[in-house]
Image 1 (tube, rainbow, N blue to C red):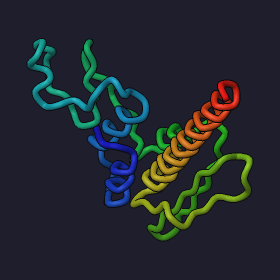
Image 2: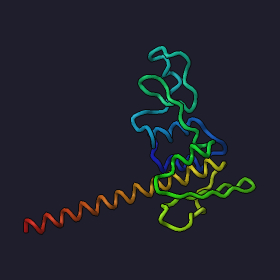
Image 3: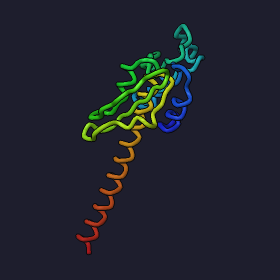
Image 4: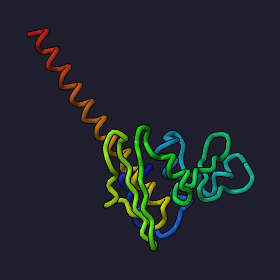
Length: 155
């Protein structure tokens, strides 16, 4: 499965919505135990018609991935909780930003997309990466503090 940074790179290079990429995003963020459907998945249990781009394989059939690259509502569902977002779209230029609600203003300088939904998806996934990095730092810091406390109690 692609990691979030690789998904951002692919989103930045899109020229139009992409249902297959929507399925990859859904599997990476929403359904980590599932995967995008392959054309021959229907043959495994004679489930009928082959899957369409944007379908997600699951043990009981197929799920339809949200349309992150074409729907603003679906793209907005990627925004982490307690985050605000902003979007600027004019003459084919689509810029988006996403940041914690406690901060002022959204940086629109580095989230460009071919459509408003793609730009917002990029901003939301970048915010998720930032949250992951913060959680990792806090976890490492907490582990370091517990090591210090253990040293004090044993020393």
